[in-house]
Image 1 (cartoon, rainbow, N blue to C red):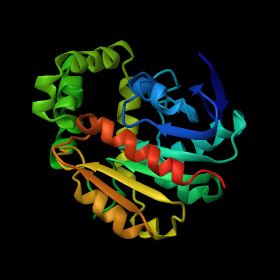
Image 2: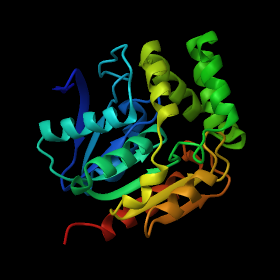
Image 3: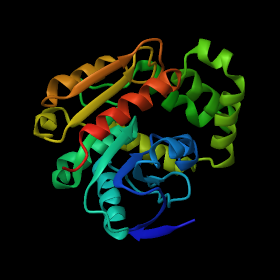
Image 4: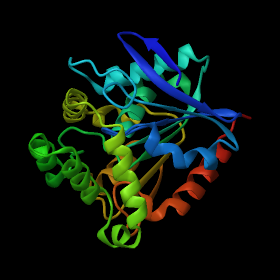
Length: 266
């Protein structure tokens, strides 16, 4: 279980496969365990880097203010530590916010950018009312209730009913490796302050934007804002698909791999 000291924290990370580096950034409260299904898909062609953000998983969770900018700096320090100068960057939800900030702060390090189920923050890029309500009520829930409510906002009911074993596995992963309370809270505070709207036009990396049409956490309207503001961005919205994009996983992987292959070095 490799860890590396970056600034004020120890970051847990994993590297799988060989090839051009591809970094996947977890969302709010998520950890590398939840991304394990991506390993056999992407490590065949890429050097896949997974890591736990500050506040989650096996990385440190200091009870101090977090910002999305700081979390982008964390990732930059991690890449320095493991000898990666530039990479394809893939971020989902909060991870997509970190990816935006990383592309703005370290443009020379981004070979291509994939933003999934995320937003630019600020007055135009908002979380849903249900998502904000969940954040406020989370402290009154036990861990199982919290995960179940999170999944209700992240997966369509039809998909959940058809895939009970998968849903139970996701619940088990969250409960086995719970995000510390202070990590949840500090990540939420960072999400609320996130705002890249005015700077999105500065992103020059080839960009693919993915979103679920039935996302209850971050409306698909946010994907349209990102696509409008980021020059030459490609947008794909999956029908009948929730925040975690599980309903469209095969199409998601195909679209992402096609995009990455088009933007390989040389």
